[in-house]
Length: 332
Image 1 (tube, rainbow, N blue to C red):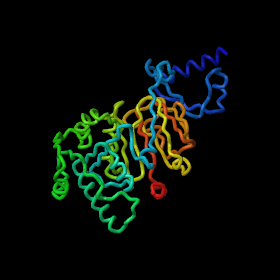
Image 2: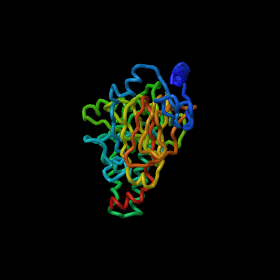
Image 3: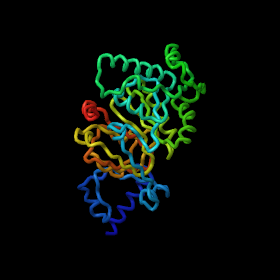
Image 4: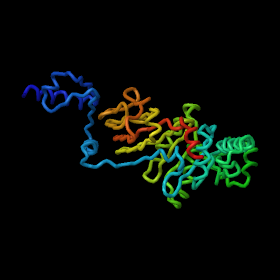
């Protein structure tokens, strides 16, 4: 037993000294003889900071978060007790039209960011044209699509036609070139959000665009990470948001579970040294996640409730809008 204990201590010292991880096979005789060390097919990761050990040992309880993305993809289309903010970025609106109209209609505050106002104008015009070809009373009347409450940006992308179209809408110039129009829009909106006690922000963007613009939007998620601000990026068929360090419970709509829609966890910006999940088809167990190492893509669900516990920021993304026709029939 003394020899086994010596092997165990030597290996843990090696792991701590190297700051790395070691894959332990299930059939390893050495570790089975080492007593309390249990072999596991995942990677064992170590980090020596006291704060990390306290968090993972739960001597300091992890901060808990609850997420209900179904509110973005079912008949409520409203977030939080005080509503939500809607922002249109300078990309074509790819989210299903009925989702855009209902989220926009139920918003407490509506903002178009520079060239995003061009895409909002195009969306309103397209819905007006669709009305002429479809008299369904179940649709929201295009005339009821509210204009934005304000338009922000450095106005290098907005067209003269759009300026005229929204001529009665307040326009706030944000000329700072050291930040994106998306980030600067938050600076303008935050005082109003605080006054109205609104913490949820829905952003229409297009993740199929240029990679640098996609990364800039993800960077804004990191900049805006606060307990009183949750930001959701909505693209053609997906929802993306930031998971801060702590324990997260995500209630997944049953439609997504039964249809086995995709989901992913990405460690953007820094290494996550300890990530454990439950409720996914391929779960993680005290895994270290980083680019160049482990990431979780093309995963899916085993249950309605997914739990993610992490010691670092992670980007959560999930397919959402693949059952548009079913939602339309539910709304009728």
